[in-house]
Image 1: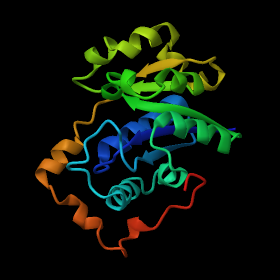
Image 2: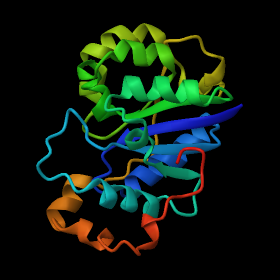
Image 3: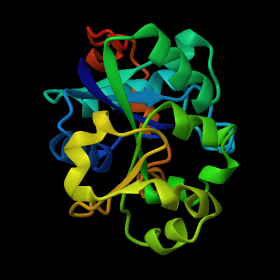
Image 4: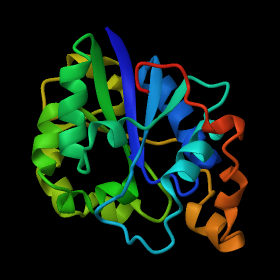
Length: 210
């Protein structure tokens, strides 16, 4: 069985923080790969300021190079908009793969707003990655009030395929201060770099996730 971490997001743009937490999660959880699920449109984020999908996935593919990370357009191809539908489709499509959902503490803080979030937790384990400034809110969040009883110790993180569901583990790595918001503020037209269809990052990576 392959062991794959799933990291969903807008990747608007992808940056070294995404790469750093993915590589750290690979080590902590004993993963074969991390798949970045680049969202065609996050229902919880405004469309204003969102770069075109082609530019966002191109930035993700560029950032994932030379690492066991795959930037995937599978949500676009599946036609799924909500995480609960995506993970259920992936579990069905890849029966010889064990998946774990990766999310930052900022996402845990609003996890209760996600559609059928309890079903997500009952479908695959969740690894929450600490993020400076968000940890207190995440631990006090509505979803954590329900998930806390299913928390597993970080020292057992590599055994996540053995856990009964729901299951949650909190991971702490050296924080990377990079922020997509700050990158957009510094260069609002960053996506123009990927407007050229001949840009090498436009070509999909060869992987089952694509």
